[in-house]
Image 1 (cartoon, helix red, strand yellow):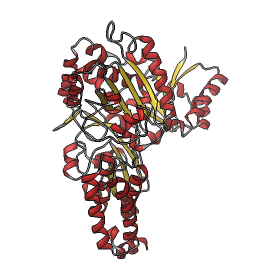
Image 2: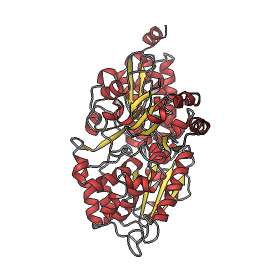
Image 3: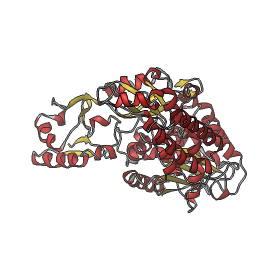
Image 4: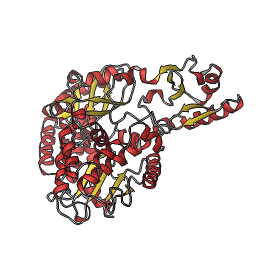
Length: 518
């Protein structure tokens, strides 16, 4: 009887040698006459322990990590295939502190199953949500999403149920469902982990959405930098079609749902929903003016439901377990769980799924172990490159939409990037303008010109030239960009800039910059 050994095919694990580890297990086991079945699962999210190897034993799955190819021989010699002791032995995976302290709803299967096995997916609760939805009227499915309190996980936090109802109620001969998987924010990787670790969950979520709003065609728009994710999703779509979940007569006779994966061309701006639609139509990724809203006139002018990966991935749980079960997690108007992606200068980076309301300090210090450098935390950016910089004294702030908004910050896609006390916040403000200018679609003047002038003006501040006057100019530029930009790309760039100036003013004063440098 073969022994199951789980070695991730997740891109993070591959980047640190998971392929070589898998090959070493095959080679070393064969040399000893031991039969192993190697399953290439997704990552559990403990990225500092990758490649993480799990062995299925009578006591459950035992984790070892981080494992290199040269460790495999000694692992087998020490009886790792039976869960034996070794310097790299971590213990039962589900009992590790990082895992025990989470509330995994969306990421429950990731790292547990073979991501390309339909039977494994169904054996771990997959497809329950779609089966439940198909017994309900489409309007009732929409109502379940509304009652769950699910909000868009891509940045704006708009209530998903309202968006779904708008598309459901729109009269049209054709409707579309589009998944925005253009995960371009720095420090974010949850979408990629879903594609590589549980792609059927996203397909199920999109099928439920299509049934609910009356769409016959769906598109997944994936960023070009995720080749492993693309391969996994293409395989999953083919399997789902073959099984009849999607495709011809998926929702009953004559009720089709076709799903197609499209790869973007590397433009950050295509994470903005209307720019994404332009790209899907074969045009340059330029932002559209709103109204009309995509929910009424979106792809090819038809009503279109556009949701982020994490939003759609939450839907199968809601339909399988009920809206209340999901809404019981969280606080206030922030219901359910949030997959937090922890990166930057942090000791233990990775993905954590937690109910809304946990503090930033508990995430960064409790899960992350503080900075990797061992130096004090100085700043934390939440919500991607257009998110605010928060000071260390603000880390007790709970992670929820309203609290962050009240503190001139945003949740965004759930990315958290940590900086220690060596960071120069004037340079970070400059980077925000630089990033905006580089990634602007160029359609509106406040974004296209404002970001360029902003970068130039921050350079003058850093050089010590008319500092007070130039800070005033930056503030004026930020007002124009916030009020006049066509989309959130230019409209949110002032958030990191002003948060750096307001929370770390000493970094913009020439004398104090010189002292810090010395």
